[in-house]
Amino acid sequence: MKRLLIVWHSRTGAARAMAGAAADAAAAEDGIEVVSKPAEQATADDLLGADGYLFAAPENLAALSGEMKAFLDRAYYPVLERLNGRPYAAMIAAGSDGSGAARQLARIATGWRLRPVAEPVVVCTHAQSPEAILAPKRLSEADLAPCRELGAALAAGLAMGVF
Image (spheres, rainbow, N blue to C red):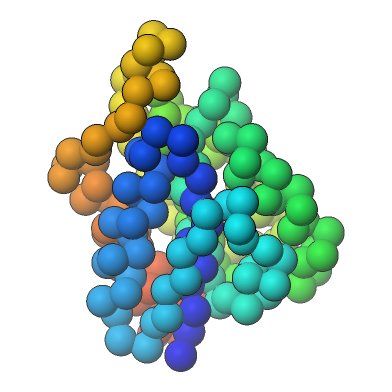
């Protein structure tokens, strides 16, 4: 059985909802075990025990959220040169464009020699004021559909041995 690790961080609920939608879709694939962990609980051992990865985080100030970055920092050297070639994908909850966080995650994944298997899914909440940015987020079914598709595709690729 292949294991898909989903590591997520969310303060307002958007990235958590994205991760949940992807996890539900991935879990429907035969031969796949889905492990979903908040970034603050995920470890290097979780990375080593998985066959593929999906990272979901908000973009804060044009970068990954601090908690997701802290996870990546904690795990970076313990897994360096031990994840080479494994597939990954990313989901970013953004107030505007999400490109800064996606680029930052791609640079880290390149250092780990992970293989990107899809373009990042970016869900834009259009939150621009301090009140809107800090408010709990409720994503629409249309927002979550690409997250489900990504989770299902990543799981199917792992199950079929494509990745």
